[in-house]
Length: 546
Image (tube, rainbow, N blue to C red):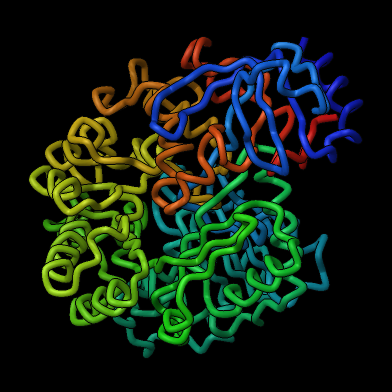
């Protein structure tokens, strides 16, 4: 039945330029403007926007009519936290995700280098020592065995640590005498020499020596990422931290009507030109493809690399409590600056200390300067002291969370935190029960971008092998309706866009997808297997399996 549908829609593709299009005989689901979950069987689109669901047939005589053949229609999904050019760059580099050892990783890097001999640097991403037998951080020596004469730089899967070979360390001038920067750490061997791994702010010591990307690379990366997201049913994403070059790049494309996915971009708080960008005010594209009215601030590192800032030391590293990427003395001025300029502040916080710092400073700045109504967010909200969870609701802070982080971290989270701290970790249902609005995303390319993986993880608390049985901390699982809302309406709300995106109700852009199964009726364990057949933006088909 679905294959017949695809053929029919292809046949009608040339007719969708008509001012109005009626797609009928679909099995549609959406949240409407009043946040009600509704079903529909037909949708009328005019000039790229939704006119009505289930319209009176007599009122659409002039519309191009498409028989949906009972396909499942959903609004385009919104990923509330990702890194767009980072995804594109990753798609163009060596992918070392899910490899089972440092040796396998180094061997893949060698093969990639042999096939790309013109590269000045070999770059990649995705390694995770937690998956390796010894669970130890890798060393430059392990890379040197396979690639010695060309610099290699591989980011950890979470983007909060990097692994270099000796050539890269030499080019960066990183030696035993190099000091750890604030908010960063150089891992060292028993003699004090850099071992090859740099954590959080120490990564910049090396990355500043990598040739900078130009506009051509940005465009290639954007094209790769956009094509990938559209194939997964993502029509809008929140880009978590862009610098001035990307700020200009996106605006140039928006002016040319050349963006392929909708972007809600967050300015990077560490960009030297942040004040200048704030002074220019909000950037909002009339076609809904670009909005810039928020700032991404950086609280701490990640749990896997023990950079998440904790109130008490790590359970498996008693001398370590994590890292603060933004110094305490800089937190208040930053919050005051961003909120004072009327920009939403989105603060990266993984550990319970970083979350507490964010809440404390939001409360302080709200009291003095206001800004509570800006729909401020904490990005990740991963490990929170139980007593701090109600403060999110009291302060109107939106937790922007990523379901697949839980299923990726479950193999090490208890080792890092102990059982007691897990009570406030990945606590989606607890936040929803208190009335908080959650915006779901993936944090791609840290995690895979597929939103159906996120929906599956949110509902089952299991990986894609449906383990562990019964789910990990199953009381924090959410319903499929709650997860769907967090990936649509509430994600749009977190970007001040619920009136134009995040659903298929009157007046919103007609962004929707057709999928091969009904996520509301199938077994939860099969949600991740959902395939996108077609993706439409503003009433135009932009992706098809045919």
